[in-house]
Length: 407
Image (cartoon, rainbow, N blue to C red; front, side, top):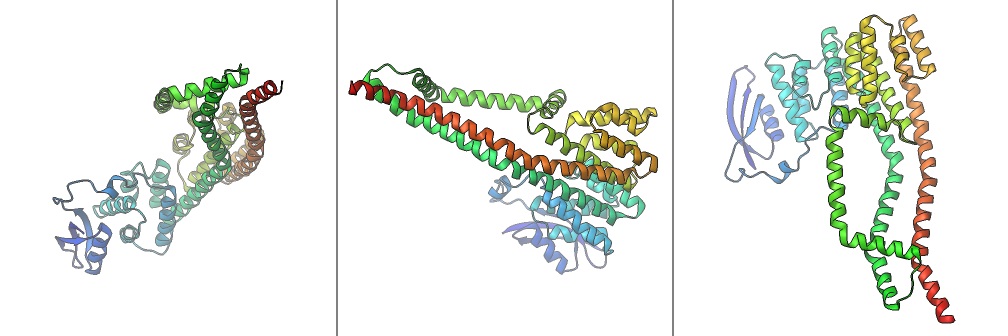
């Protein structure tokens, strides 16, 4: 049990404060609610035993998962549509949040709302959780009186994003398991199996065939220099991570990802589908075109494609049509460009971009289904080659020794 200090307002609107003992902040908020006290701030009081960082705090989640944002958007849509005041809705969701981090953020948002800030401004205080697209959608919803619609659109968009990530994980799960199994098998062979055979061959003093010599040399290198390999791999990973996190490095890496065999086209279609869906949602919500293109270029998930969208924004700013600037980027297929042309002519560009997003989603589904069929024979061939090399390296000397004994 920890001790918490609190500050709030009672049913008469008077500010009250005090402290109480409870297992968590949520319990304190519930107890204050039962007393008809609206909590403004709840903080854990420092104690001699609480000076050290607790285990659960040390390993607590530092980010809000996409699932939590989906649930939050759905709940806010339902509460807003039902006419529940925003502050009361935030306090209710705070008490029922799945993670302490989300509960803390919603409590801070509720505090900002009580101080007079708008919902978009209060959410903007947490940029690592609520991105620019989320903030702008809420801002437009507040200004137009359609906050429930904004939350519904956000929940639909986040749900599609979650489904896309789930499909990618399902498609890559089997290849990753096979690759991990191959790495484990190679490690066992190099550290345990080959050294045992090499000791036997050394005692016999026979001339070894070249496959066996390569296997023994490789095993000796693994056994004697495994620490050096780990250091090189770790240093390379850190250097690559730092380079990718730079502006130029991230741009080059995202451009290279789009050219990878088998998966490059999938990455491109996922990014373009995300662009089309986000563009459609924000345009239909009433966000200005220039602002939409600027936001989407930063949230599309690929810096190379984001740079192309930024070129579209610059072209529209100079007075070019959206169709011409999109064609100049050479990112879209002729079919998508035709749909874009019809959307500009009819003024239903948001509806047409929604169809473009659906088109890319169907393409991604087809590519992900085909990915497993394309990777499986490659993995089978790789496994066959590995087994063949091991078999030749281990059994050729045995066969040679058998022939010598027979002769």
